[in-house]
Every structure is written in structure tokens, then in C-alpha cells.
Image (cartoon, rainbow, N blue to C red):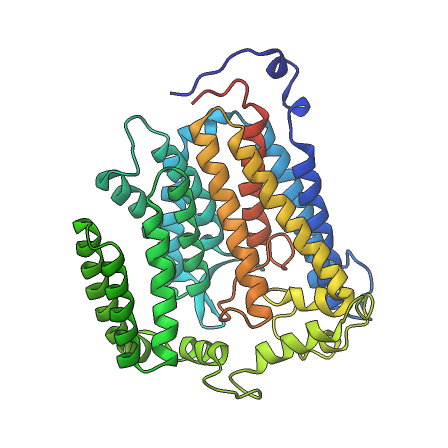
Length: 427
């Protein structure tokens, strides 16, 4: 159970303990997003920043309501988030089920619930409630992530929203939940799980690029070398044999997964990424235009409202998933580096906040926030420069959209609230 100490810091009120540096980073990113959305979809007939007939005018409303939402969160009691963790989680699960029935299909994904002129995306809020419930579960008494029962329970908490989101189908939002494995790792999950996932991704790529027989021969050669080096250790021999059996089976299953499990647009994106196809007019158009826009910005960029790739709509989804193209084209390498630096600073700041918590719940939740934001930034920017397949997830605090901005605001400000009472919050 949570309990509090009436420390002098707590008695002064939470405003004295709020991490204002994190709040400042949040406001800076929101402002950068607003200016770049204005530039990305600029309309000379509506030049004002707060013209509500435009996306940048609507984003201004989203930012203002997000700030109000953040203030409301800071006024709540820390125990509120623990007490209602299960309730919030169930609500988002119900919404994820509802979106499959009454949701609106946009771009092939049935992920939005229409509410008047606004569209609510439940998958964005599921990230918040999953982090909260996972933190509550893992901070419970006698919960050890090294035990299979605890591991399976944690996997179920993460896996249920993933399954429902996959049915929409929204692959990008589904994969975001995979980032929570870093939370489990921080709480004691064996590093072999991370290594196994990394090896699985590597083998999948290699099996698409090279002959499967050559890969198997290479794996066997590596296995034999390891056995020779550690031949006195029986456990190593058993581990190598099991690993080889699993790896070889996986290699021969890659083609089947690629041909019969993945959808056509997913295969096309992987083909573009790996250079298996070079159709710049159709399949590779989005990524190619994105790279042209970013590269054309050079060192200092073309200047605000001067991005030709953006202005003439060569770049797709230029105010949402591909908003980084506007940053790269108009602000150049220097502006892009500043934005990446802000994100890096934010993630590192969240980790610092996580490690100074006295409450296991707060620490676990903080790592959840860091994992989700880090994943979004890496994947979003990676897909705009052709390093990862295009999976369609927003850039935190930058991309246009109310659901996205509100969910990231909730993620961050719940952490700020928990941190503001860290001296009195003991559970």
C-alpha cells in the first residue's frame, strides 16, 4: 500500500517540487511542433497561427487543452493513479473493442471513434493505461519478473491491447508496446530475451537477403566454434544445440511468414527498406520524397515556410507521420540535430527521474514513459530517412493530432506528478 511522510518539501506544495526542466522541454517540443505544422500545411488564405479552419489552428487548441490536462494531473493525488490503474486499463480495452465495431476506417486502419468533428484514437491512450497497470503489477508484493508466473502476467497486460490494436489493423501502434520489454529488463528480465529478439530480427533480414542454406551452414560453423571454445562446459553445449535448432527452424519459416502472414503493403515496405525493389514512383515514393526533402535542407535549411517539397505536397502525411521532413527541409541538419538533442535530453531526464524515485511504482512507470517516447522517436525519424519500414506512428509532441498529444501529455505529466511527491510517496 502507498503511504506518505509529511516532509517539509511536501508541506510546501507540489509546485516547489515539480521538475520544471521537464515541463520546459515539453513546452519547447509542443511549440516546435506547432510551428512546423503551420509551415507544413500553410494556407495563404488562413495565415494566422490560430485560425481554427486549419490544422495548425486546431493544433493550438490541442496544445492549450493539453496544458490544462497537465495542470489537472498535477493537482491529483498520487494514490489516484494506483487506485484506478485497473479501471483505466479496462476502459481503454473496452474502447479498443468498440473501435472495431463503430470505428472509422482511415487509411486502411479502423482505429478512430468519431465524436462529432473530432476523432478519438483509443490506441494512443492504451499506451498510458498499460504503463500504469504494468507499474502497479510489477511493484506489487512478491512479484519477481524472473519467475514465469510474473513474467506471463506482465506479458498478458502488455499483450491484450496489442492484440486488439493489431485487429484494427494498426501495426505501428502495436509495435510500440514491444518497447515495454525495456521496463521488464530494468526490473530483472534476463538480457538473453533482448539478445534473442535482436537475433530474431537479424536472422529475419538475412533470410530475406541471402540463401537460406548458406545461413544454416554459417550458423552451424559458428556453433561448432563456440562448442570448441567452451567444450568443457556442458551447459554451453546444450544451449548451443537448442539455439541452433530454434534458429534453423526460424530461418526456414521466414519465407512462409513473409509470403503468407505479412500483408502486401508490409512486404512492399520491407522490400523498399532492404533494397529488394526500387520502385520510386509507387512503392518507394513516400520514403524517396521524404529523403529528398530532408536532404535538400542541407546544413541550415531553406528557411521557415520555404520548403518546396512540403509546399507542393510531394511529401505524404507531412503534418503527421512525416512531420520530420518539414524540420529537415526548412531547418536543415542543424535544426534536426537540435530537435534530436531535445529528445535525447528528455529521455535521459526521464531516466534520471526514474532512478531517484523511492517508490517502485514510480520508477517502473518512469521507465515505461522513457521506453514509449524513445521508441516513437527512433521509429518515426528512422522511417522518414529510410532506416526502418514505414509503420505510421507520430513524432511525440510534434505531429498533428489531439489523441497523440493528449496521450503523450498524460504519460509525461503523470510522471512529473509522481516525481513531485517522491519524498513522501513510499510505495
